[in-house]
Image (cartoon, rainbow, N blue to C red; front, side, top):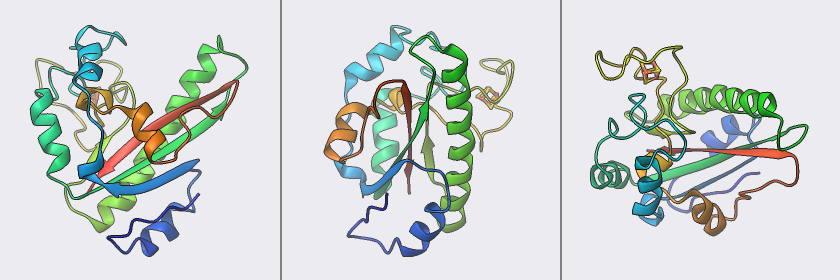
Length: 184
Ligand code: SF4
């Protein structure tokens, strides 16, 4: 699905993005991103079990305030989803595979944006799974260009953001929907 931002010429980007297996996407202004300290607090209470395990998660990603400032430093935001069918809600392997595919697609989307814009900020799902064992906290990240912090770690309220952007948060029974965002 193609959605346009009124403030930039997205025609070249759209042409490339529509070649990819993106479910839905939208361009909007960074100033319209919905932040919530509570989202970040769920991270800090180790809601997904990843807190303090990688460079892509709090506390390594910096304070909530600094994360917000980083996002707002950019003028534009882009959000996209993948929607993958799984056997049922207990299909753990299906969820893992869906996330792997989503991260591969995030790499492809990142490559396109980086060919147009320097220093994009790329956020994705649930921390980083690039390396089997993360170097955190003893050594620097091995692949900083492939390491995408989780949207939640930046305090972004994805469910509400999707709603105001007219992007489906849930694509129906037995599907898993993943989100990534790019600031540019
Ligand atoms: S790319 Fe590797 S070293 Fe960097 S955050 Fe991810 S798992 Fe850790």
